[in-house]
Length: 416
Image (cartoon, helix red, strand yellow):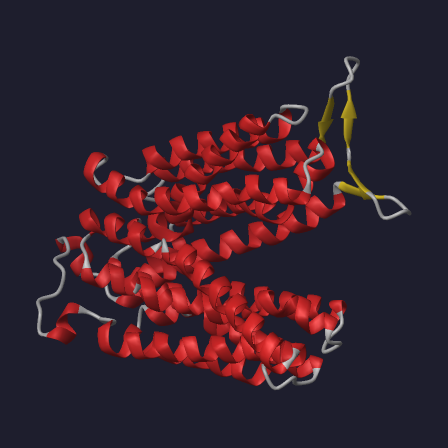
């Protein structure tokens, strides 16, 4: 599951890795690339919840192979330099297909492991996004450099998509041989469930997911958390350069630390919650949420360039993000519903995350001033002692704080 879902990322991130080449070779304008990227995100947000509900009802081994095949085919078509409007349509379809990967994996996890072990395996599987990003950039960079030197730059960006297609086919092959739909398909007994859950069918389970305040509170908490997470992803380097005077290389190095730490904490989060908290995620999620607030406060409220403070902030941030991405990205919501509705719960939680990320992008953009000479600055209020509090800091830290409160409320309302 970990490897197969990682190959989805290769088929998703080929577009990001090829943007520079497409623009430099005149294949597409920056504006065209912008609306193509938006089409992808819009389709992914819709596809997350739709595919979640579908995954509960189908053979997820076959469905994930189909989704990855559609994604690989989309990459193949883009490599032939199709018109911009057609590119937007194809990449919209790719976004919807991409959104089938996580629900299929999470439904399979719920079918193969009981709740008291689910967090352990879910945490390990959640590292697939880190593995996928590494594979995507290594594969893409290697192909672009080699093809560019051998056949010329016009072929470089095209071959990046074709390389992603090949990797998608490798993922399909791996899924065919190793991805398991359910224990029953392998001649094994189903995972035991309690008497109450055994009486619920898929339709009933999905109704529980749709009407559970706990699931929707997890989705809200995830959206608020995603606002702070994508704030650092989208604007973290910008903040360090504009506010604290770091060079581009220095800012990139500091921000990248959180990704490495996040991969470790993501893998450990499920194991820790299963072994030390009896599979309860609330306590660890609240602690991680508070750590996220502390990290953002260190990062944004301490004036001046203090390398070790900023590095420590990114270590804290990465540790918190790894846990919250696993729990609020779906695991807590899945725990709150019968296993037959795991896909629906994940879809609701995932939709909340991407809505939060999108809202953050818009609001953060409004809180940044752009002068006529092209320079940018942050909007804020300056106090008598000369200290400036940026509205961007208030917004990001505020979203992280509200996320913690929603996690606490979700824990209390899980039976509603």
